[in-house]
Image 1 (tube, one colour):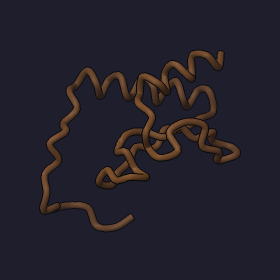
Image 2 (cartoon, one colour):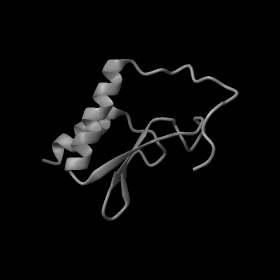
Image 3 (cartoon, rainbow, N blue to C red):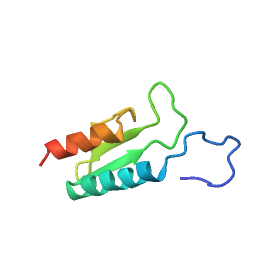
Image 4 (tube, rainbow, N blue to C red):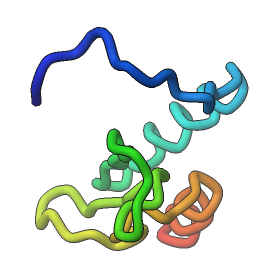
Length: 83
């Protein structure tokens, strides 16, 4: 990717530990179903809402949040429907 380290701006969004735990839970769920969750690393813009994207892993197909506009909640709901 590039160089990590000092950014000139500090993100104001700091996830709480419960949100992080929830994110990890949803990630595990996704992995078990053969998906992966991509999180936007860029500043939000019109085609990048700064949230999440769900990708069907083997075929690399975006199934949710093609513009990084899916919430963890939406992804979790989708994955649970896939049972």
